[in-house]
Image (tube, rainbow, N blue to C red):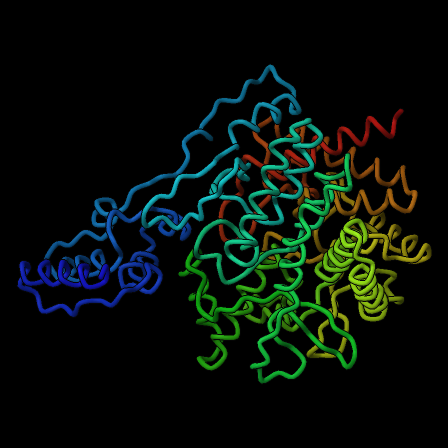
Length: 523
């Protein structure tokens, strides 16, 4: 009935304009000519701007209006967008830094400015409404992002904001139950992919004071796990199906996205890069770009098939060491939760999965020659050539042997450590997840990993350098940044498909967490 009414209204609009324009079907914004034209005309510097605006009408009606209006002499595309979309972005982030406060005092004042929700449903908005309060990263990111939120949550716990931290987890439980998985972020254009699965770590964090509360999250933990392990049995590749890759009797996982089109939030950028490859290779490249976005490392030479060539990105051919460590922890957490729930048979089943994955991580990801854990390209049956900070994840989850931890520590301290902290990779590709940039979440993983194996002085050195850099940039700019240049401390970070953002959720969280850790280590 609704579609019939829309079609009638659209027909009257078209007759009134006396234009011979076909009536569009019930389409989404991302399928419309209006969307494609606005993005390719670069009406907005950032492609994400358009998809976060709220259309004033049903897209079918708006598309019909656009197809009619664009044929008129003197048509103004930018003006059309301004008249037919609303900006619901959150102005609360516009603040003046109090220079009398320390960086840590500033962070604690930022929590309220970065807190949103509960959400009301806005018609035609791309936002996925959430039922509880949550903390956004900041800058252009005015919705929550999956793996960002774990590091933000650790900062909330350090700031004794336990209720807000639990609300964050409850929102992710809601997403698992309503969407079926946790999307990359809470926008409808992210529904084709997830991000690094940190939900089990979030649950573990908010139940530290009472581990029996883990059982409250068992249904969602298992649904999350089933999403990552699901197969369609329709792929032509007998090894790989969605997130799952089978290597004989071994099952490991990769990042994946179910779409093969440009990302709506980076439409013109994806189309431009796809123009560098033959037509037959475009869908695969677009899918690999999406999978790289699912990894959270968008973008990095880590995913390149050919050194220095962004268009050679082959994320779906790569088994990432960090992802498989995260799934190992998920399996262990579900086993522990079943044990608490008085279901030993189910607990044993998940422990067997975790034990098997641990063996596979040792087999496929440890490189004895380099003394480091590396990704594995299953299509090439070989380790990827690049060393990255993802290699610290096995230490974080206690998967490395004592000897492996010692060798990994040496590589981290002698190769990755720079004046401002740990560099993400050793490649200078101009991608943001490469040198010379350092990122708060990876500092956290490496530091906690080193502490797990007793490398206290090394962990303190990394934290000291990272916090000193954070403090210096805050002193000079009054802001906390999304990422930092850890090699040249006189420069801000760069690279990537958007400008460096400030705010910033996970940097705030890691800074407070590190401060707390340093104080505990000094006691």
